[in-house]
Length: 156
Image (cartoon, rainbow, N blue to C red; front, side, top):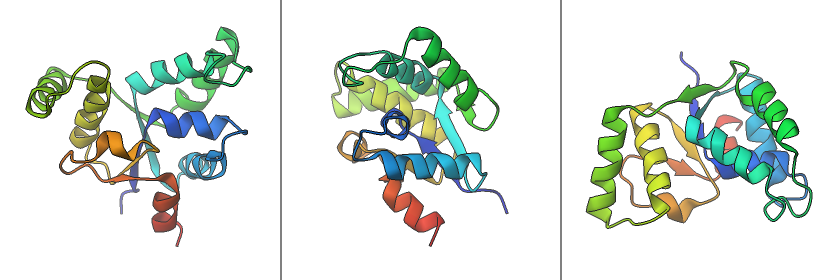
C-alpha cells in the first residue's frame, strides 16, 4: 500500500517552525509525521521560495526573522534532504493555472494559490494541508483540510 500523500501549504510549514504560533503544535506534528514516513510529504518549489521569504521577514516572524544563512540551512536540511517530494510546474500546470484564473476571475497574488492547487491536483494527493481554507474553497477535487483534521484521519 502506498503512503498517504499530503501536500503542505507554506503556512503549515511556517507555523511548524514558529513556536509562538497557536498553530505550531498541529503543524509541527504533521511535519514530524512526514519525517517519520507516516505520510509522503509533498511541497511545491514555489513553497520553498515563499517559506524563505516569510522566515527572513521581521514583520512575519514577529521581530525574530532568520538570517539568509539560517533560512537556507533550515530549508536545505529539512525540505531538500530527500524526505519531501518537490513538485515543479510544467507547461500543463501553467495552462491549468491560467484557465482557473480566467474562469474564476482571479487577479493579483491569488494566482499563486491557483498554481499550488493545479500542482496538487496533478500530483494525485490525498490531502492538501493548509490554514488558508478559504483561499482554496471551491476548487474542484482539491481535498483541502486543516492539519489537525489530517492528523485525526492518519492517526486515529
